[in-house]
Length: 209
Image 1 (tube, one colour):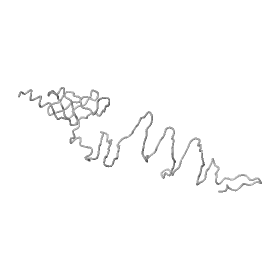
Image 2 (cartoon, helix red, strand yellow):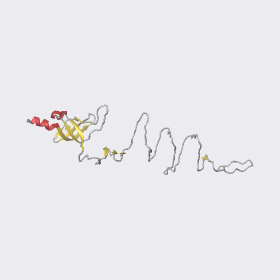
Image 3 (cartoon, helix red, strand yellow):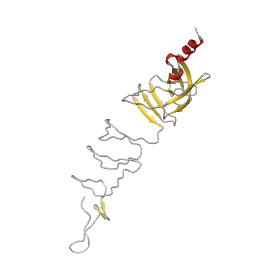
Image 4 (spheres, helix red, strand yellow):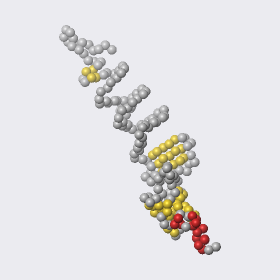
C-alpha cells in the first residue's frame, strides 16, 4: 500500500480540537496532532427551513470527516466532552444547556420540572397572545403592567410585605356594592365618624352602624 493511500485512509476520520472559529464564515480550523487544518465547515443541528445557530468554541473537542481522505474537503462534527469542557450534569434524567456566562436551561424528566437560571433579562414577543395554562402563576417580586388588566374571577389582596394596601391614581367605577370592614375617608371626611350641622344648631351624631 502506497504512502499516499495510507495518508488518505488516516485522514478519513481524525480527532482534534477547535483552534480557531470564524462565525461570519461559519468555518473552523482544527488542530489534529501536528496538523492545523484549513478553514472547514462544522455540522449544525438543523440548517434548512428550520435553522439552529450555536457556534462551536475554541478548545472544543471534535471529529473531522474527510471524504476520500482529503482534509481540505472535510467537515467538522463538534461536541465531544473533554476535561476542559466537562458535562453540566451526570444525571440520566436531566437535559441541560449551559452557556458561557453561567446561564442554564434544565429539564428534569423524573420530576417534570423546567428551570431557567443565571439570566439577566427575558423577552417573549408574540403578535397575538401569550397563554399560561396552569392553576397558579406566582410572581415573587414586583409586577409591572403597561396597559389594561382584565380579571375574569375574584381579586384578593393579603400581602404582608405591603400590608395589602392598594393605591389607584385615577377614577374608579364600581358596578355593584362596596363593603368595608373599616372606615372610608373621602378627602378629610370620614364615612363612619362624620357629623352634620343640626337643624337647631350644633351637630348631629355619627351615622348609625
